[in-house]
Image (cartoon, rainbow, N blue to C red; front, side):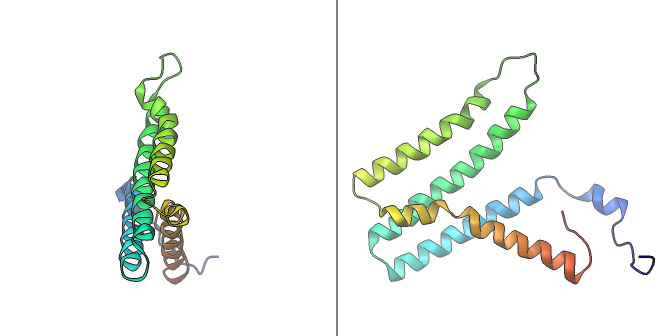
Length: 144
């Protein structure tokens, strides 16, 4: 163990932005939705493309709402009553389900394509995992 160089400094840990991970995941989600919609435009019928677009948009909205509502839950102290921020945690499910149901009933989207768009979080996590593996293995450090 004495042969491994300590590559983590106190300044490196203090200089990291706490929201950087969430922003990287959100930007990767946007990129994966954009790539899926572009590929769907060229290769699939319009309902598939609109399903990818709606599912991806709902996924981005859901991720943003999840971040803000969970932050609101942790900001609430035990002696005060929860505000509207906490209720958004539950309401977001109804908004996403209502929009998906309405679009499907109006026959505007393909249901499997909409579910594929809703899964834009998965490629974002894989990209972040590969990024972390790169920093951990190649550079022998963690990059959180």
